[in-house]
Amino acid sequence: MSVERQKTIRTERSVRNRLRSHRRRLRAAGYRRVHFWLPDLSSPAIEAEMAAEAEAIRASEHEAEDQAFVDAISGLDEAW
Image: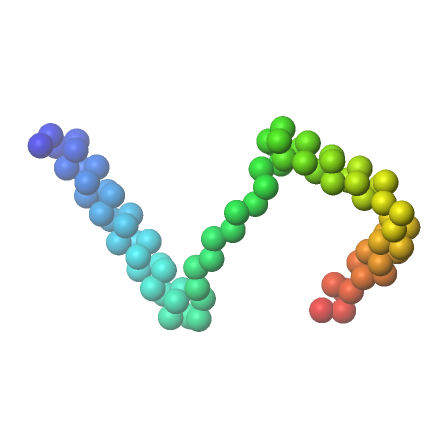
């Protein structure tokens, strides 16, 4: 095995150990790991889907009352 490959393996192990240690400390502090999958806003498919949903909302007969509801609750985060 080449010297360069040995250095790479040592670095990978070192990173893996630091990450493992970091995660242990976080768990000990009461945290847990969570993964989120979010829409890729640069995706043309997602952009088209959002445009279609926005148009459906605009065309809805309930659009005015839906917007009034959103406006009414949009200040609730200030109470937290």
